Length: 460
Figure 1 (cartoon, rainbow, N blue to C red):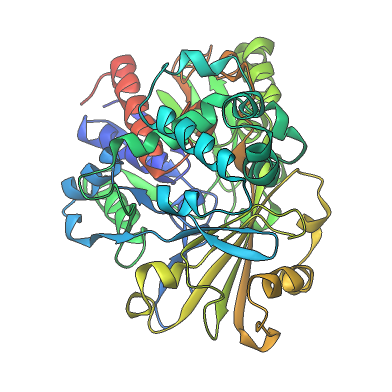
Figure 2: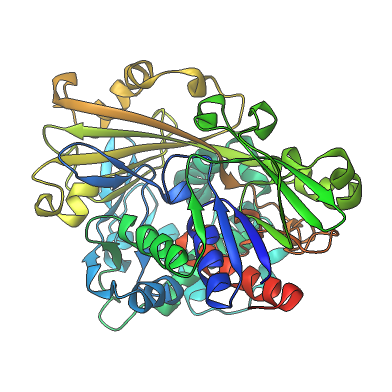
């Protein structure tokens, strides 16, 4: 029987391993973190209540993820909820859920509102196709089609919040896909968009995938990272890292070996670009080659910094508040309990205060309390009544590979899943294009990788 190692027990890695064991392959999944889910991992906030460390929801058009829940017998967990989005700008929160709210959006002149609405309609109708947007920046397209006011008051602040100093370089393809998502909305969503959150968090999905893998003869080894990859005459060897290696960070070169190397017929690495490069021994580094590794190095990530607050009461009446005002020290507020209802959060109130930052940004060095100190004035701008006593608990998470920077010319940088080394594959968010990274496309790419591996090594 062929054997395959999958490195990473996020959505892509687990989906890949499930398909491999179904194809008759002996599969081991290595995971650095003492839990499942990768960037969509959950945390226990007490009394067995789980929420995601980084907010995750599904579009109603995310058919791949929805199908995965159904196939695993978890379809009944999926519940759709009406979204309530808003913009925070000029000291006020403006609802932003449809054309009516856009027409009432006074930070823009009336003519700019109409112009922006027509441009958004054009994008939603899909006119032009992807190719017509790939070679121009979002800033140039928006200025030309929506006007300077729309860029300065809405899109510019949003893009600067997401991409910092790279805002002017981001490809219009990134915006095209985000707006185009609405082309696939189900009947009844024209007036009010809906998102899906599985009752009890995404943990049941990951747990059931792991159960299916192990029932098929595979192993899911949490708190058991890969410390190094080596090329052998009879395949590719994984040097396992010692337990608790996650406390040493993301660089596998810092991990002590936790056992002898294990040789496999193929290895699928579901890790960020820099972690993949750091896993390779000298021989594999040379075999993968400078051209492929150079592609990985030229793709830049911004770090996702997410402060999860348990509050005495919500800050706003909305689910998702986009910050379009540079006076705020964060870029978004996602009020999870406003969305799913406190009946699904044990009567408790949880909000995500989110940021996307360059790797050397000063906020990344702060602990949760220090960051809350820096955010407090911004939270009070959202709700003047806010007091620090509202905060019952807080958790802070940093994901260095949170957001690939999708500049013009990005498609030329995307690394192929099959690396130059036979039977060594890479799967990660940098390959999700033009779509934005998320669970739906992670599952898709993990399953595609499994199909490619089965072509290479065959099944049982």
